[in-house]
Length: 182
Length: 182
DNA sequence: CTGAAACGGTACCGATCGGTTCCGTTCCGA
DNA sequence: TCGGAACGGAACCGATCGGTACCGTTTCAG
Image (tube, rainbow over all chains, first blue to last red; front, side, top):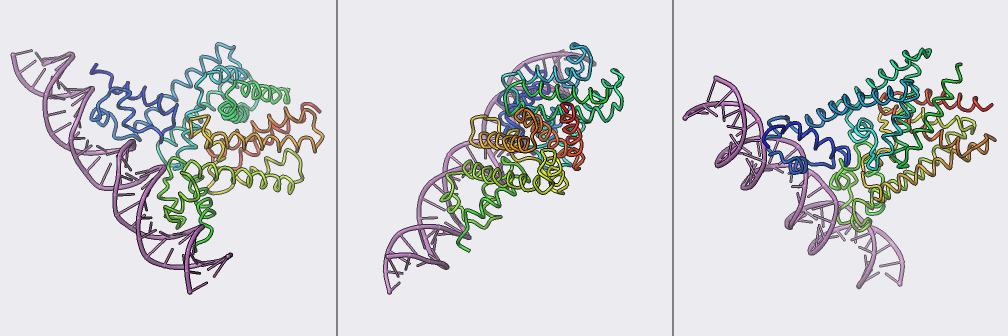
């Protein structure tokens, strides 16, 4: 019962932040739902802000690993990122992208949380760019940025509509985008 | 000095909510910056939630009026929505779309604020759909939804990058989208 | 001239915010 | 067996949260 305090804090905080937003979740609630003592929390993190950035860091790594895996499972083509997104959008408790939510909720561009969110998006774009290169698609950097814009648009739309439809809409746009050059 | 209390509350709240988010701005700050007495606030609004929805309602109307005006000024073609967005993105204190920010910040789908945000997006789509019809573009409903996804993607991207580039990126995607059918 | 309406200011309410401190327990390696 | 690290629990801090109640002033129509 005594071990894993840090891991429990990260796991509980991630769920609560994702479901309710960062500002809406107090330290009190994270402690009670994780079963971690107040003092233990401040032994592992300098404060709430450090917890937030740690959560975002872990989320970034696991989300990109998940995307890579799902895209590969679908065939490895860049277009398959939208098939992966569709899987996420179908979740009953889908609440959008943590990085986007962080950028809209936290105003200060220089805050560690905002920088983590920006870093995440940059890494996702790099991932998509690599997919472009693997598929021998010309101008992979430009294409990746276009796909990233479509992904973000799909994420926001899916959050609003509550269905995976936006993923297919974005996918068809991406298809016509690739077909235009061919 | 005594009149306009409601208007001052709406104006001040809109600025503060847009710049800092809804949760991050307390009633206290709205009162001090607007110069309105605490009691007067609760005479005009049943509470903070009512103020939020009133702000969103006003924002919706003025934003769509602004978009119509700017699109018309650029020529009236649906593609000109991205030229309008580019103007917004160039603002130094650009903080994205209020409706998107509301949807990401407030988790409860049934809350009045969320419903106002969803209503705003629906109305914007209707506006774009009408632009499609005016330009004799086939399948205006489908096109409008595609454009809306591109607009939301551009807004989120612009918030992240801090430049108007995303508007041009979205515009070029929209162009190839319209060219595909022709 | 009078009275009601609208107003700004302030004191106050319980609750919660993020954060600090101390205490008693549990666990584990030396 | 012993000591220290890690832990959970709770008391406590000043500050702020959204909201209520009361006060004195200003404004304006009847």
